[in-house]
Image (cartoon, rainbow, N blue to C red; front, top):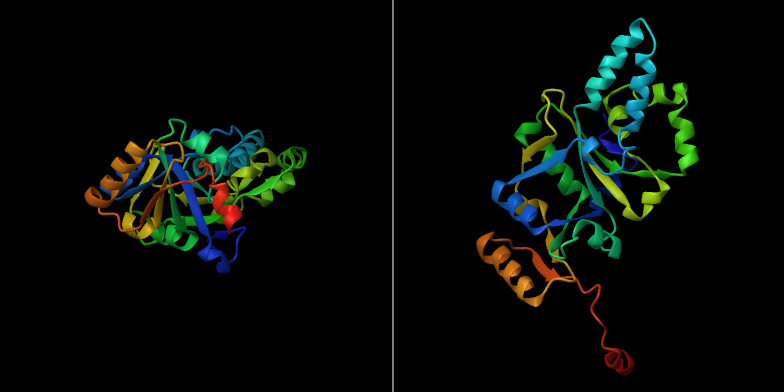
Length: 251
């Protein structure tokens, strides 16, 4: 089964980035676990809408469709995902995901992220996928979602069911998003799915919020290097730093 969605094998070296709180980063290192969540916890109400629409359509019919509807509902409740971006840095990402101005941006690659989940004992025999989100105009996407034939063609197997999480509206295109998805039908009513990782292998570098105070940059850097023993690069983003125009003219 092809575990890559909307990407080719040669994309494995593509770098991925994620912005979140420093507390979450510390938790990742100390617990040595990565956590995926149910799509219903994501902000966009249209996440997982392909399976929602398919379930409602099948549930309204009788006979064998009812059993298929139960299957789709079960799959919908047992998909877990995590969002990353191929954009190394943007003003929007810092403001949305580091609202307190004390967040971090970590870097990895498609291959390292995917290997982290497929090599974990908690994920043995589970279906895992990674890929790029496709952005579409709203009317085009809604037209597909209202087409029974299209819906049935999108839910035939576990790969197609996972791929249903890789559609978003053009309003979100700035995210340049990639996703890691796991289908775990063995879980009960749980919103989170955790698996063991080696954070020092998964995370290549840590960049601190460009609005963070110098004092906090110093504290976080020392904590990462001395307490968490992180060997990768740690630096503060220069996104909002005023350039030295004199040096540019001299050059």
